[in-house]
Image 1: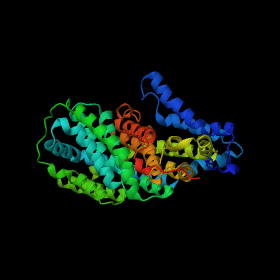
Image 2: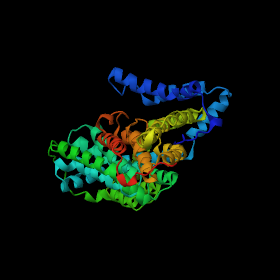
Image 3: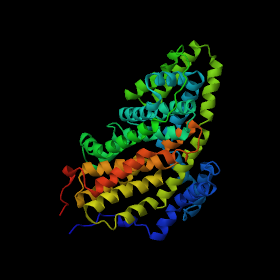
Image 4: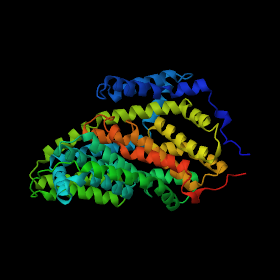
Length: 442
C-alpha cells in the first residue's frame, strides 16, 4: 500500500483560513478579468486598480497582527531582490527599446529581416527566432526585450494585430525558458527533483518540441495571408548594430542588465554617428523609462499581495489540499502539474512556484513511481504554461508595456502554451516517454 505524501501537520491550514488567504487572487481575477469580459473591453479596468483593491483586501484579511506589521510584510515581499532585479531590467529595457526606436535601429532591423524572408514566412520566422534566442539565453524576459519592439514594428508595417505578433514572441520565449540548460526554471526543477539537466532536457523534449512544431505549422498556415510590404532603402543598415550587440551578448550568456546596458551604449554611439543630439537621446531614454512606470507599479503590487497570501497560509493550504487524494501513477503526475500551476497562478513566478512545490513534488514522485526526469519536466512545463497565460506575469507585462497594449490583449493568440498544455496532458494519459515509467516505492 502506498503512503500518502507527508504534509507538515504543524503548519496545517484550516479550510476557512486557507480559502480566505487565497481570496485576494479571486478578488483580483473578478475585478480584472470578469469586469473586462462583461464590458468586452480589457482597457476599461486598469490592472493596477484591480491589484490595488486586491492588495488592500489582502492586508485587511491578514488578521492577528498590527496594521504596520501587515504593511511591512507586504512591503518586504514587494521589495524582494528578485522583484527589484526585474524592475531594474524593466528600466533598462524601456530605455533601450525607446532609444533604439527613435534612432531608427528598429526600422533598420525590421527592413533587413524582411529582405531575407518572404512576407508569408515572417510570422513563423519570428516564432522560430524567439524559440532559438530563448533556448540560447535561458530567459524569456531577455527574449521579450530583444524581439517585442521588432514584432510591434512588423505588425504596424503589415497593418496587422499587434497583440497577435506579441503573442508569437511570448510563445517562443517560453519554449526556451522551459528547455534551456541555463534557464532558472530548469535549474530549479532538476535540483528539486534530483535529476541531471541533460536527462531532463531529453524527457522534456517529448513534451515541448511537438507543441512547438504544431504551433509553427499554425503560424506557417496563417503566414500565407501576410501581405507584401514596401521596404525602405538600406542606406542606414548600420543602425542594426545595437540589436546585434544585444543578441550576441545575450546568446553568449552575459547578464541581461549588462546586455541592455551595452545595447543602450551602442544605440547612443549609433545615434551620434547618425546626427542625433546627445540631449535628444537622453530624452528618448527618459521617455522609455517613464513608460515602464505602470509596469513597475503593477509588479510591486502583485509581489506584495502574493507575499501576504503566502504569509497567511494560502500556499500551504494549496499544498495540503492537492496532495491529500492522489491515486496511481497518472494521478500523481496530474497532481504535480496542477500543484505547480495553481501555485504559479498565486505567485506569478514560475521559478518561485517550482521551488515552492519542489520538496513535496519529489516526495509524491518517489512514492508513486514518477521518474525524476518526468517530474522535473512536468513541473517546468506546467509552470511555463501558466506563466505565459496569466496577464500579470512579468514577461506578459513587459511585452505588452513595450507594445503599448493591454496585458490581456495577447491572450486569444497564445497558441504555444495551449499546445504545451495538451502535450503535458497526453504525456500523463499515455505515460510517455515509456522509458521513464517505473514501479512505485513499496
